[in-house]
Length: 171
Image (cartoon, rainbow, N blue to C red; front, top):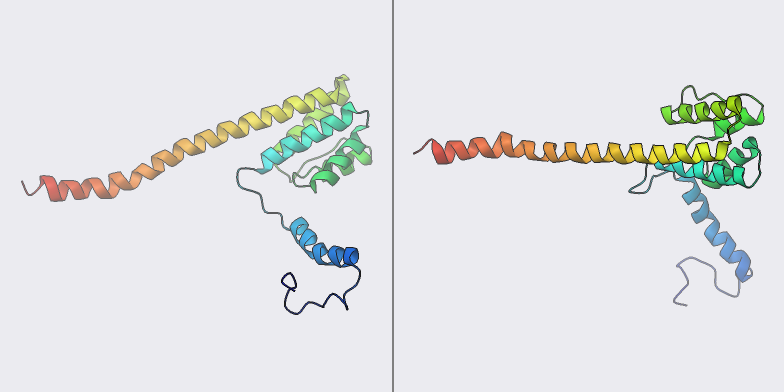
């Protein structure tokens, strides 16, 4: 048939259609889960901000902090590194982000602040996620401005001296 791949079994010798479909798509799903490539336009800070929003939604639904963190980690595949904080919360520790990115240390600080003062954690996490997004946006704007300067450098270093040597000096 036209849809049959070369070397694949024929319809008569193949297992049932649902099990064949599941068997054929399983490696694709597993390989996509294994690949940790970041799509264009996203960053780990964006992922962390999104995961913090997930945690905030879980907290607003009434889950305790350790379960909310675990659900966010499970939903995102721990792309932002919240698993360490989730394990610490599950064990009843205050959490520690040593060895991780600075953004995780700030998340631990927000959780500790909420625990010490009694302020609801969900709005704090949402505000922290918004601040992370704003700082990432500023970082990207600065990088774009630097890129503009770096792209003009070859013009000044190569083209301008060539213009002077070929256009001004002979006259």
